[in-house]
Image (cartoon, rainbow, N blue to C red; front, top):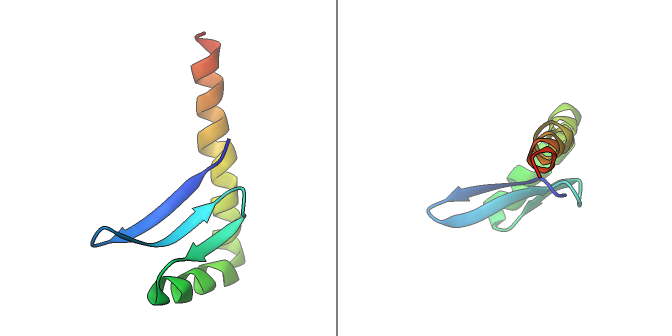
Length: 67
């Protein structure tokens, strides 16, 4: 299970957080700068890492308990 959060502007992806990578990755010049700022913010980065447990694992348990 992987948590992915992408940011878009004008249909162009500029940043992405992936729980398997554990950090933000920038895809444009501006996105690289934003990703670097977000990666330097330890509290924001740990909050994004916690989203996998809060969102993904919680919903998987609900989905598979009905099967």
